[in-house]
Amino acid sequence: MALALRASTSTSSSAPSSTQRRRRGAATVAVYSRTPRRPVFRALAAAATVATPTPGRHPPLALPPTPTPTPTSVADAMSRVRAKGKAAFIPYITAGDPDLATTADALRLLDGLGADVIELGMPFSDPSADGAVIQASAARALAAGATTDAVMAMLKEVTPELSCPVVIFSYFNPIVRRGTASFATAAKEAGVKGLIIPDLPYDEIRAFRKEAIKNILELILLTTPATPTDRMKEIAKASEGFVYLVSVVGVTGARATVNPLVEVLLKEIRQVTNKAVAVGFGISTPEHVSKIAEWGADGVIIGSAMVKQLGEAASAREGLKRLEVYARSLKDALP
Image 1 (cartoon, rainbow, N blue to C red):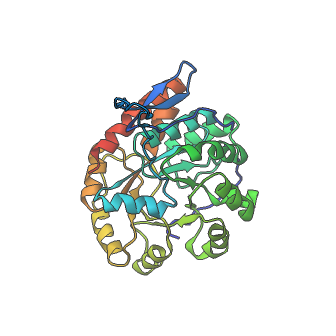
Image 2: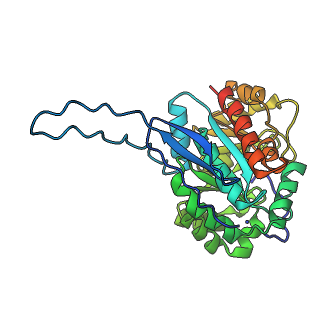
Image 3: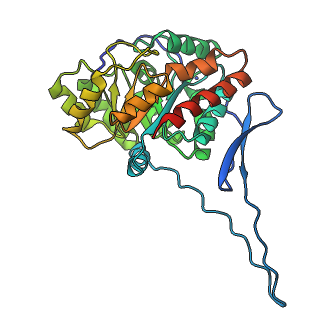
């Protein structure tokens, strides 16, 4: 794989949220309940027109609208967006920061705002591909008691309520500590659709790929500006769901500008695959999102800047409000 980074000791994610979301109308909005940190999504149903009943007959019944089907895979979700001529909005948040109840609320919130895929970071003690913001976020989550089992339990409750697929972003150490077969099975049971493992070298993915295939998990691979052309072709061919194009050489974190080489790299990847390509690392503003979509990316991934909204707020409730405003600004910048 493009990123071959070291893994060390780990810990990872906590209690599931009981907040539920219902979709029964043409539109869905976030309504914050009186209980802190628990936004509830309720449908605004259009009033049904009741016809004057004919004598001896029952009035016609207003049938509920057909719900939007949940994408069966990440590739399916990306294909739907591409078919509309749009670019996918892919936000990233850290599981358990500031706590897992807030993470559950954030997943529902981002889904309600129109996320096409959501990346959920599994907190780890040595996140070597991440910059200061996500490192601090992982540390807060671990300090709050986040574990892999708790993250999976939360996801198992929340994913059935979401209309977009969830992808786990995890370093390989937590997966190995849990056991590759056990981790993959737990992810499937939790409703996860894909995995991103930034520090698993491409040459070593074969063994884990068997477990991913067995559990219907798409293994999304990364390529960077430093990846040799021949290796990039192999990665593009093997990646599932989409090809993850890292925009810079280095760690995650917001940058002032987008690397102009991304436009060239997108064209090179297009020459070897027709799979969706999503760009991540260093993206933080509506202008960045708009420019990357203009260059032809099928999806835009926003991580560190998204994590800041939750992790650096004075309270979880304020963090969710900040996340809503920020995520909406990025979503609106996409075509």
